[in-house]
Length: 164
Image (cartoon, rainbow, N blue to C red; front, side, top):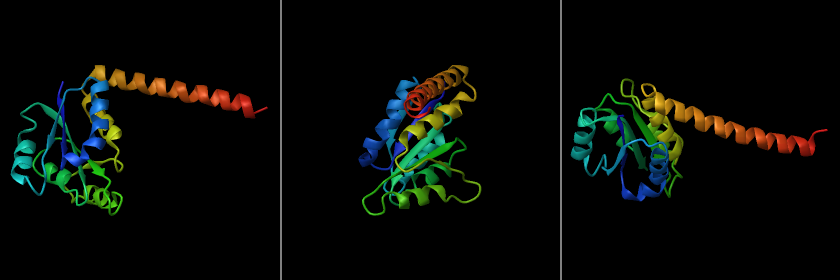
């Protein structure tokens, strides 16, 4: 199975990123976590992204706040899928990070999830790997079926209470 990389621009992003880590752990997907900044360590971020495919990675998740150029910088040097995870900040509540992440030029795509959407970033990465991994695909389907059953049970309870 291919690994997933989670790269964050600062260790201050870790409280959000830990939700992605927990999700990947729950699905038994191998991963690595790194701190590389598009602005403070561009050479290291570039080197990691450029060699990611040959090092066994299948998807890269890039978490960054404020200017949030990390996902775009990483995507510019790899053909692996890159998922941008905008992190909320103190000034604009993450809107700056969201817009920096989602507004990529043609030819350098970055899939982008919601501000602080670490769980969905991990699930999207898992779905990408599941294209060629039946075990992951089955696990995703099973978890979704379980979630559906919970909602239907809640519907049954609410309907029984309020519908004649």
